[in-house]
Each structure stands twice: as structure tokens, then as C-alpha cells.
Amino acid sequence: MCKKRYSLCLLLLIAAGYIVGCNKKWDNHNAITDPSISNNLYQAIKKNDNLTKFSDLLVKSGYDKIIAASKSYTVWAPTNLALASLDPAIVNDSAKLKAFVGNHIANLTYPTGGVDQRVPMLNGKYNLFEGSKFDSANIVSANNYAINGVYHVIDKFIPRRDNCWEFVNNTTDYPLFKTALTNLNYTFFDSTKATQIATDRLTGNPVWDSTNAIFIRNSFLDKVQNISDESNEYTLIVLTDGAFTHEYNKLSPWFATNNPDSTMSLASYSLIKDLAIKGSYTAAQLPDTLLSSFGVKIPIDKSKIIASYKTSNGYVHVMSQVDFNLTDKFPPIIIQGENPTSFATTDRGFYTYYREGTNPNTGLVFYDILMQNYGYSNYYIKYILNAIPAMRYNASWVAINDVQKTPLWTQRLAIGNLQDTTLPAQIVAYKNYNEVALGKFEVLSYRSKFSLYVIGPSGSSTTGGNNSISLDYIKLTPAF
Image (cartoon, rainbow, N blue to C red):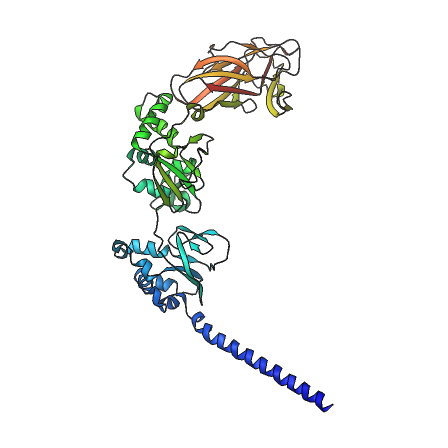
């Protein structure tokens, strides 16, 4: 019994000693780490002998006070050696310095080991943080915590880069492309930023103080790709003056107007609208064909890339040739029958049907319009097209008559006005689901608005289906 008690006491003493030893080790651990996490980020960086140059830049730019605040931040701090090659022009220019330092600081805490992502920086730019890399820099000391965030030490600084839009605006090397893009600037009034100072007594409309509500916007950014957006990535193809002139000369005949400036603007826009895509491609990653947001194929011959630039939101590639295929630039124009602009003045809504069916030849669902027994001579359905290039077109349609074998009615397509008889009337055959060729016509000058009319029979019967019109779609295929 005594031996058992002795053994038990011995075990208890050993266990107590182990616990005391562990506690002592934990106390030592706390004694090492506590001082560092009691510092704010600026204090922690200032104490690092390898970051004295960056610490000085924090002070000079005013960011020392920002990262000493209670908010959480992440700092990617370049070493003294990395900053040895920093251009003095940046250090001596307060705006450039602030943009440079802000390119290394982000809101919130980003330790290593998280999801690879583009991180928004305090200067409004984004930098890629993945694994042990920050943009092109290696992280040589990670996850140095402070009371209000974390800092990582990196082996090179990351310059503040222009985005794709800034690149074009700031370059002087490609004036034709730049002019085509900046000519799309326009003045925009934002009433949400204006102050109402009165009300017009005649109209009741507000009178604004527009001092702070007038902005310059650009229709390329609005309608094509917003290549000024830092939160997304883009690839922009910039053409040398020689390449721009070559492609412009191919396009300009199709945008002929009675105003040379208007022709130039239209043709230039048609060219550049297909040179920006969403997504970031290095020169090595570029495929032989890209697809623009308008569905136009962009042929890429890498041997014609004369320069590539990494931007803050993607890449700019300067090319000496982009040989667009005209059939890609000018695809067929499709006008859906069920989307008319208007009808002849006499209301015939009671006799009008908007239908859904399946084309047995293709197995595809179609939507069309059918009018029957409306009792009106030369009744018409009007369609207005926008932005029609000056060229010859092959016209065709699908007009489905699945309602009567006899009589078969006729209808015709009038071009531009009701009196036009360029294209002959067509018999609408029973259950013909194929495209029917209507003939050729020519648009002599570019038209911002262009009218087509589907005109029914000249009789005015209200029985027997003699007065009918049917249309699935009209197709206008350019005939170069």
C-alpha cells in the first residue's frame, strides 16, 4: 500500500512539473509576441530595420497617420534594397508619391494562404495577391501582425500603372487611334449632383445650378467596354497609325454621308468598337481570334504585335495590322416580324395574331406575326432599322403560311418608302418554312434610321384569307 501511494505521489509531482514547464514556455511565447501586436502598423514597420526607406515614404506621403488609425489595413512593404531603384521624380512629387505608396496598402486584413484575388488598393488601383506573390513581387516575410492589421515584406516595389483608358489618353505615340477614341467624349449633366435653384414658371421644370453636375463622359466607355473600370480586367488592341489608316479605308465607303466629319466619326467608331474585350490576355496568352462584345471576330497575328503594356486593369497590345474580314464586320441584319414599329393608320388589331411555333426544318421555336381578313387594301406593317451602312443587300424572309392552302396571298417588301417597287411581290406558299430570296437593293448613303414595309394584297376582302400578311423575320445580307 505504501509503495502504491509513493508511486501515485511521484506521478502527480511529474505531472505538476510538466504543467509548470508548459506554462513557462507559453509565458515565454507571449513575452516574445505581445510587444509586436501591441504596435500599430506604422510603428511595426518603423521598427523593422529592413524597411526604413519605406517608413520614410509613409511619413512623407502622409500614409503613416492613416495606417496608424484604428481601421484594419494590409501593407506590402518593399525592402530598402527594392526601393534603391525608385525614381527620385516620384519621391519629389507629392501626388506621384501618394499614388505610389497607396499602391502598396489596402483596407482590411489579407494574410497569405487566402483566396487568390485582385485586391483594391488605397490609390484606387487593384493588384493581384496570390500565394506568396504580390503582383510581380515575392513576399519574403509574411504575416507580420500589428494591432490594426498585417504587413508583408516584398522584394520589389509595384509601380502605379495607368489603366487601359489612361494609357490611351496619356500616350502620344498613336494619334489616330487616340483621336478616334477621345472624339467620342460628350458632356453629361447629372441632375443628382445638381442643386435646384428655381422652377420654370412656364414649364414647371426645375432650374438647376449645374456647377458641380457637368461631367465629361465617353460613348466608347458607355457602349463598348468601360476600360476605365479598375475593378474589371480588359484587353485593348491599339493600332499604329498605318494599321488604323488601312482598316479605316476599308470601312469608310460603307459609312458615306454628305458630311465628311460624320463619315469619319462613323467609320472610326466602327473600327475601334471591336478592339476591346473583357478579360486580361498577355501577348503569350492571346488566341489567334478574339470575339468582340458585338460578336465580331478579331484576327490576332502575334507577329504584328509591336509592343505590349501591363495596365492596372489588364493589357494593351499595340499592333501594326488587324485585318478584319468585312463579312465579320457587317453580319446579316435580322428584323423580327413580331416586333413591328407601327401599322397602317387603320387599326386592325382584332385581326392580328402574335404566334409561337416550331420550325419543322430546324426544330427551333419561332415567333411571328400573322394578319388575316383585315379588309384593307395595301395594308402594311412598318419596321424601322437603326444604323444601316451604305451598301448593296440581298433581301430574304421567312413568311409562314400554315393556315390555308388556298387562296395563296401575295405580299411584298418596300425599301425606304411605301412607293418603292424595287422588290417584286411574293406568293406566300403553304407551309414553306424556308427562307425566300426577295432580290437585291442598294442603300446609297449611311442611314441612322431606315424604314422597311411589308405590304399586303391590293384587295380589301374580309373573308377567305385573301387579305393576309405573315412574317417570321426579314434578313438583309450585305453583298460586297
